[in-house]
Length: 87
Image (cartoon, rainbow, N blue to C red; front, side):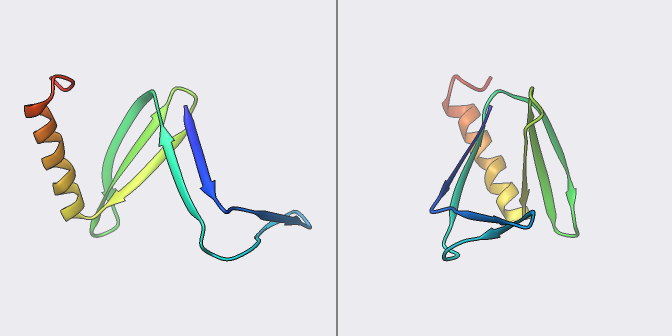
């Protein structure tokens, strides 16, 4: 299941094209639940891309720099040590 929450978001549809309406101060939160597939690959010269897909084909991709990937790895290691969720 994919949820998308966009604050202060409005689009104009004119002649088959979408156009942003209002100021450029939009914020979004995207959540993907019930992930069925995970892919990790190189992205460009300096980043790693994580791709997550649910059973309905919704997909979220996240590109991380090495220091962000290291922080993620450390967080997962800490979770493994401190929680019963990850065994």
